[in-house]
Structure formats: structure tokens, C-alpha cells
Length: 120
Image (cartoon, rainbow, N blue to C red; front, side, top):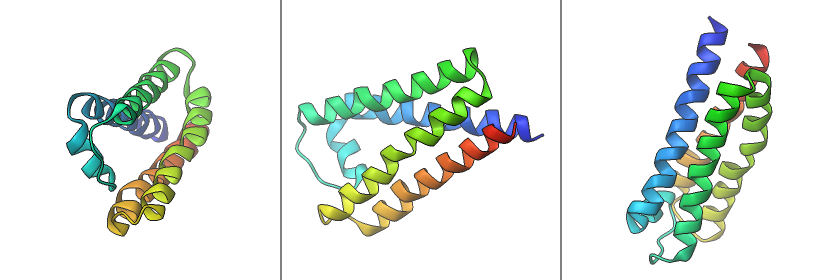
């Protein structure tokens, strides 16, 4: 049961970050507003889109080809991104609700995913 939960959560998180990356590539202004810091469409938003899309695809590849332990380490390390996003939104006077309710909550879920994968 824990293995199915661990894999399921990891797949959902990786697909979610692929979605976020695609959103930054296809609709950068809306994606930036959802991030919590208003921004004009710029090259930065495209870079963020490519970064997030890549993270999601790497996570799926690790899970498919290297297994739970590799994915667990990946999740543990990649949790730095939403933690950093939390600080970025707060530092730039963005929405505290988005900083904590989206970015910090994402970091917590990613760390839970890593723990489940280590236990699987």
C-alpha cells in the first residue's frame, strides 16, 4: 500500500510541475500571477517554464527507470525550489496566502513524497 501511495504521489507531483512549466511557456502572464508576484511577460518566465517542465520530466524518468530511491533523493533536493519560491514571493511583497498556501505547502508535500519513497 505504501509503495502504491509513494509512486502515485510522485507521479502526480511530477505531472503537476510539468503542467506548471507548460503554463509558463504557453500563458506566462497568468502563470506569473498564480506564482504570487505580478510580472510582465519576459524571458525569465520562459526560463521558469523550461525549468519546471524539465524538473517534472526528470522526476518521471527517475521514477520509471531508476526506482523509488533515486526519485526520493530527487524529491528531497527539488523541495528547495518551492522553499525558495516561498521566500521570493515574501521578499517581493507578494501574497502571503500564495507564499504559504501554495509554495510552502508544495514543499511540504514534496518532502512527504520523498519520505514515502524512501519507505517504499
